[in-house]
Length: 385
Image (cartoon, rainbow, N blue to C red; front, side, top):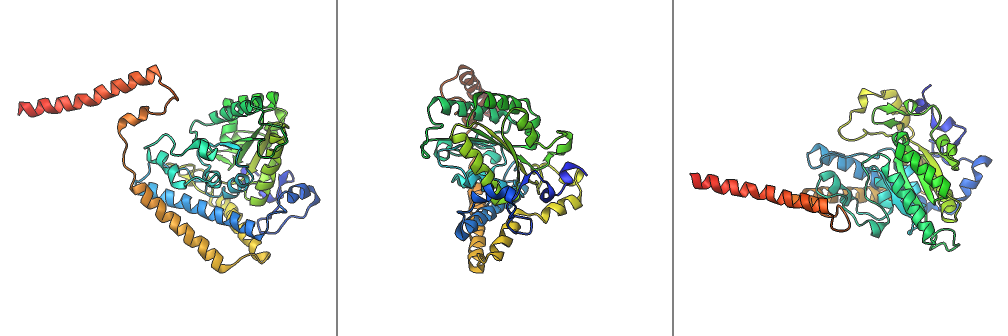
């Protein structure tokens, strides 16, 4: 059986607190992780459900907007909501996130207006949000390069005295989110080397959704991906990425280690990309319906809903309010995107560097001259008539 076909719920290395049927796991082996979510009462569980539902609506609405020609491209996180919302809700305000380009759920937990993400996929902005306001960096489209940025940022935190002070409002961790395909990139391996040797406060959070575009994980690694972290001397753990409680607990432990000066952690969130790699991809060409159905039965939102019902925390009126809020989000996205005006072409030269840069200035001047030449040509043609 291929790794990507193996049922996540029978993996002995997997940290799981909630079965696919929505039943809490009482195994002593996961008791330390269960203790980390013991404070999440019914209201907190409902909030996690609320977050995942809204993030999924963002996904489906944005995909529809791309199909209507309003966006140039869109990468879904469909099916990965538990890994992202669970880990994101474990973050402290001062923690800093370096995402790849699929971390919409993490962005939501950091307080972003999700509509701002679509500026990049509309092709009118380099990013679209204030990174310092949310401690959430811009999306990185170059696979794996941001893991080096995260490690360097973490090393800077050490030198600034923001790690291991014992002050919970001061100690800071860094998280780099990336996919299974990124683990094959040299940048990621270099980041692991630097983080391990400097004891940097970085959590490497790998969302193994089992497909790097059309390549399965089995063509990238002969061992589960969390073993790679161990090869660098980094504590590593594999978590059920469709279990929002386990994702929260594992991230909470990793962040605690990082903030206290204990160094990096490698987390493999074993999940599944229920949608396409991006809207330019057709997953039916490389994976089976039976595989998709297997994972559809492990839907992270359905799993938490089952727990809420089993524990008497489900309320139909509340659920209807969540759906109404999701409908409102959909309307907001449609209105926002359709109102976006194309910026002047010269804006592509803005904010490339923090200060004036000779090459960029020269390119800006050339582009201005190039655009002006069209006015000259038009005037000449008008005179010829």
